[in-house]
Amino acid sequence: MKKIVSNILLLNLALISLVMTSSCQKVIDIDLNEAAKKIVIEANFNATDSLVTVRVSYTSNYFGAYNPDVVNDAVVIITDGLNSSTSIPFEANGIYKLIAYAPTTGMNYTITVTHAGKNHTSSSQLLSQLDMLTPTSQFFEQGFFGEPGGYLTFFRFQDPVGIGNYYNVIAQANDTLYNKANEITLGDDQFTDGNLVERPVFTGYYKIGDTITYELQAINKKMYDYYTELQTIAGGGQGSAAPGNPGYFWTNEGLGYFSAYYYTKNGLRIIE
Image 1 (tube, rainbow, N blue to C red):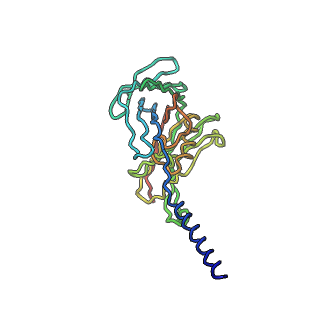
Image 2 (cartoon, rainbow, N blue to C red):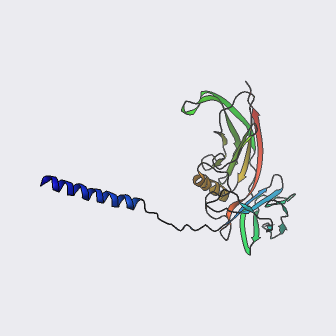
Image 3 (tube, one colour):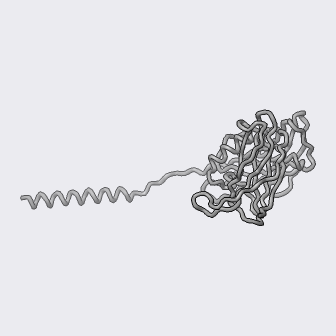
């Protein structure tokens, strides 16, 4: 009798196992819609060089490789705080460029990009220039986490008196430019107002003969907040204009940014 009950139990367990296995193999179809493309506008007013550059494109599909569609037929205009507007001519491959555009410190500038029946606008205030001093270097026998050491470099500048200075520092070591989201160095003067600012840049340790150059951009708070959020979203820094969406910088849900800024450069060559 015990043997019969045991055989029945084993048969039931086998049937349960078969049902569970069949359930695990069921194909589930999920309808994944392709996301609508969004316009991406990367606009810079480089006041030091009196140069306005705007790149216009559309995002690629989520499932495709990153290959943005450039826009060559947009209407791009820059307007200053006195309501004087200037057209930004198309150059090539989604790039619009205006040369010899004279800056006015403290002025608010607005760029309008019109495409596919929509106007996308964004404004940026041009703040005073920050002057980069000669960088310094210091030798360390050992680097972080046990890695080999070398020369660590420090950028330097004198912060003007008065809270409200924001900056972005881009490093170039020999022929390598560190300008991705996770490579730039951001800062403000909340705790350094009126002081000498001296900070290391952790792009690596260098050896004798290496040349390091720093570009110090005087950006406004809006751009500082954008970069800060972009670094958080991008994480590893993919080099894309908008790998995430750190708040819309442009009207009508345009991705990207507009930055009006002065810059200064300084560098050093590592010697004994």
